[in-house]
Length: 162
Image (cartoon, rainbow, N blue to C red; front, side):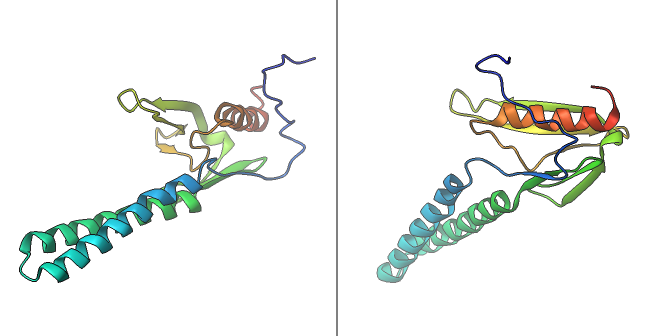
């Protein structure tokens, strides 16, 4: 019988493909929505003020910030990690990565504290060639450590080290 607070880790050999996604994806829409509202407000102020050169620059900055926030939100919505019996595929804020489990030398869960605020968590994989990259999921959330344990279980099952 398992401990009451321990996560239940399924046998990695029973599931063909498991897909992990970020837990709190909806919250990332707040950033571009707020940016869009502020950009529209500053643009309207620029039109109304007629001779407001400072409002023009503020509007440009707000639109750039809104586009950056939109990119961030879309990247989080697209991010995933697929766990296959022999390899994994992941997409985060960059391109698609695919790597066989046999080339993985280390899997690390990283916690970044943002100066006392909530911070965030992510998983970094190191390959035998020394290359490191982040997995697209999990990204924090209440089941972060459970998902990290499932990723490690797949890795150990594929390499026979578990």
